[in-house]
Length: 124
Image 1 (cartoon, one colour):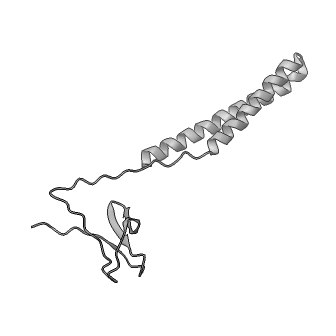
Image 2 (spheres, rainbow, N blue to C red):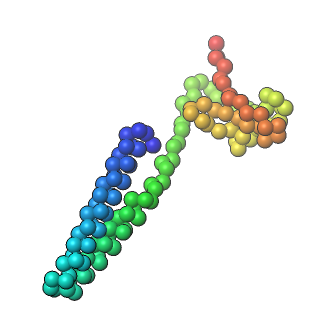
């Protein structure tokens, strides 16, 4: 999530808590006002508003799922699949050994534990 998305999420969370506070305050006002007459209606409204405030507080705490990032590589020219081997021990590497971090391809050898970045050599 980018900086704008993170700031927006914080603003939404703050607005959710502010709304929960207002609902809770309104619920308390109705419960206190129940002593002045029309007791049953005011108690029911007060309990509903306080319940809504509790629900909003809970929803403000729930984290949204992280977005899935799909990276696509546009290759120029002909591409042929080769069996990758570790630079250190010569062990055969599979797809579980390869990861992409910050746009760079990294390999971690399952046999010797060596980790390094794969760099494409120029074609010329």
